Length: 68
Image (spheres, rainbow, N blue to C red):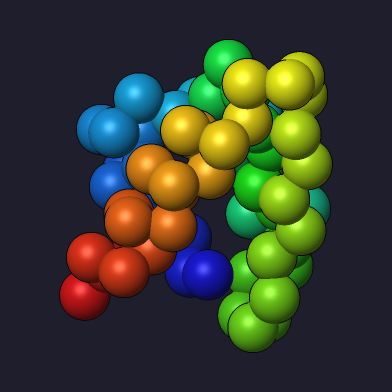
């Protein structure tokens, strides 16, 4: 993930944590999940915050597919 994609996720109702971003870690979250990984890496770690994670995971995967 590159820094330029943060705006894309923020526009799609995710929040980011600047302290992670400032040290080179991609970190976005919504009410149900957290996605994080190093900028320039090819893996993301997804953490569910509660039992309602499935819908948020589907939405996040769709956003990833639409990245250009």
